[in-house]
Length: 157
Image (tube, rainbow, N blue to C red; front, side):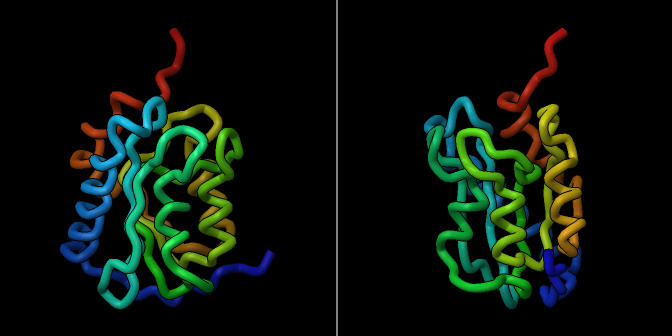
């Protein structure tokens, strides 16, 4: 695998927060059609502008990241993704979102919550890091959590 060489610029905190809030707003658009999947939102940013938006579609359709990725062409090493939940690392009803982001060579990603699903739990983030992507996790978690936590995997007790 060829490593991604991110050319997406580092963002100041206030700017990054603005884009994560846009991703949170996208996630709200997913309900109720996305259920039982969590209402994830994603925005892709290039040169300080949102170039694509996505949110979780009904089961068996796009997750937030692939929906956004479908709106742009080519390699995205100069793009930063803002996603409210860790990209999935595994193929179940839909392909792995982390693998799709790697295939498109996204340069950097900010993630609000690490996915507690036992098949993910940081595996998606590790895949992105291993590919060379710049990853910032637990970013604006408290703002994104209320929309996501009711729908996230709960371990059986």
